[in-house]
Image (cartoon, rainbow, N blue to C red; front, side):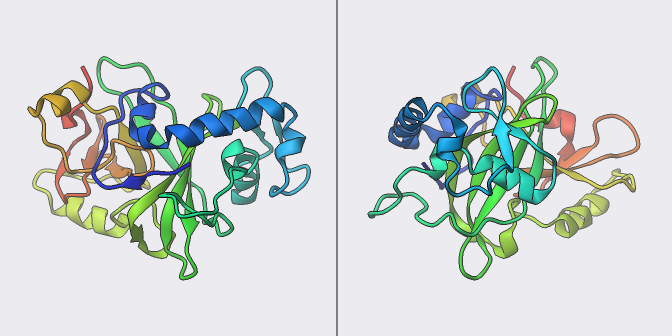
Length: 249
């Protein structure tokens, strides 16, 4: 299952609203869950994952326990997903080769003032022969970060250089942030984030947002400022307080 990133698409909630961003992949979702129903034991889905590297998380179907937080262990757990076992031959608008995976990147959810906590994600870049990211495996994390659930495998319209997930490097974002008037960046390491955008305003045409960050695999950089919630740097080069993001009401 995959879709192309043609324009920023809204993210409204950790799970339910994420489906809006992957609507074009409904057929792959149905097929994936059909596979999962047949192969109830995770071991039957482990053909491409190293043996013993992950175990099913108890309770909820589709979740796979993490043995640890190393890139190897994260990728191994993600590879247990039925989405890695869907037939990818043919000419469909989806990624055909998942054999080259880059380093997983942690993307944190930023909640608006009226929203519940957002899920965090591991985003695993899917690489081409040159090492550029042509897509991403979108794996949700449970609250304790002890299990993952692959929700989609997406395609980038334009490859991201050097296996990057964000459209802007950390250095580029830091340069823009420090040049912004009145911003005093703390010395701690920035983080990649996504947020729940105001979907109603987008649909009504009263909000135009081109800064990214509304899907976990199109994150933006957030910098601490020594107090408060800090600042974010959008993919459109704009710097703003995190509180100024167009959050869902």
